Length: 145
Image (cartoon, rainbow, N blue to C red; front, side, top):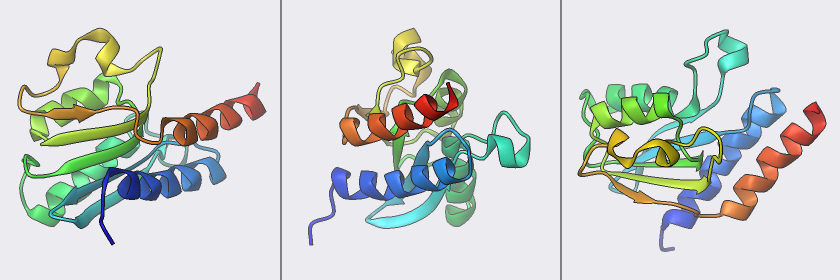
């Protein structure tokens, strides 16, 4: 089996579903290096009562512990929603090698504000499984309104 961006995004979607089922905004993330999953996470802001408990930040912490390093330059973050500015800042400091995201965040996505929020060496691959990622988010918010 060839492991590609869609394969890993499907795993991130499973994490997003966990968030959805827990009443959290359904965002899932994982960090991969050399085809090894170092971290899986989903939003836990409600559960942890912590506005910073975004999937990306939880995954960065877990991957850093797994590697015993604050730098993730040989890693790829797969996340179902374009990172926000807060997460982009943490991703910058981690020097993540690649960011692959699903749905664009039209209101708070970091690409809307300034691409220099990310490290200059970070490669960004947008829109992987965008429809599936967007559908999960839209269904969550439709139930809340």
